[in-house]
Image 1 (cartoon, rainbow, N blue to C red):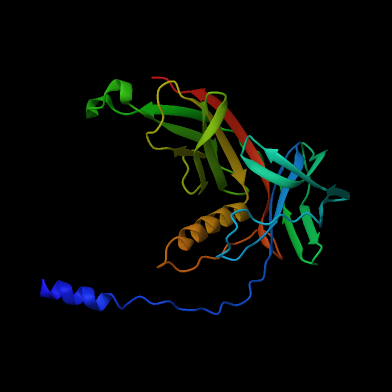
Image 2 (spheres, helix red, strand yellow):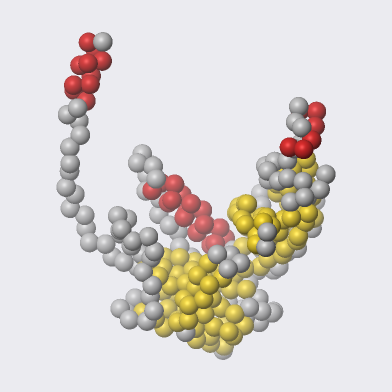
Amino acid sequence: LNILLAFFLVSCGLERDIDLDLPKYDKKLVVECYLERGKPIKLLLTESQEFLSSSIIPPDVPNATVKITNGNKVYNIPYRPEVDSAFGKIYNYTTDENIPIEPQGEFFLEITDSKGRKITGKTNFLEKLPINEVTWEFEDKDKEIKEDSAEALIIMRHPVSPSGNFYRFIINKKEKDTYTNQLDFIYRGITATNGEISIGTAYRFKDKDTLQVLFFHIEKQFYTYIRSVEDARDAAGNPFAQPAPILSGVEGGIGIFTTIQSDEKYIVVTK
């Protein structure tokens, strides 16, 4: 008891306030843009904030010149906010002009704002890969699991890409009239059997669940960017972790400019 009391008295004096003279933060442009075949361009342009900022929503940047060039074609993208309810995203620079169904060559991004800041980036469309098959398996009934409560795992199979071996796997579940996200996973295809990659989930889906399975063939720059964002988010919540920089896919700012090649299937999980 005396030892505990002494420790308590000593520890009471271990806390004190410290004033830190932090350097002035240089705010940067932040961009998020995904090009899709045959669809209009949508881009989100905001401004980065100090780590201790009280604002939850990043500042909007309405007075910028945004253009994307592909060969001799120039897409001038005006400030026109739009909500994408399917993926729960907001964009502030959009156009009705579509990207070609069969795009050729590189796409170049150039953004300049009223403060003279500039972002550039480039991207290519990869080949579109199909989902070969989606199957499911229920838990083993012999493991003292009641049949009514047994859950299923989902297995998706797709071909290996010869040009870029990075992918994204999403599952959304239908609830009433909408689909809610259940899984969002990016991965590098390291192992394959007969030119095919299999990716699976945990046991988490129930009998009669209606699922939307989305498969994306992504660029390495997008894979690296998402991984670094996840690492930075984890480090920010851990006082013992080293700071993790975000590895952007653009120059002159933060963010990503990339293409999307996707396939999807709808399934109903049944026993």
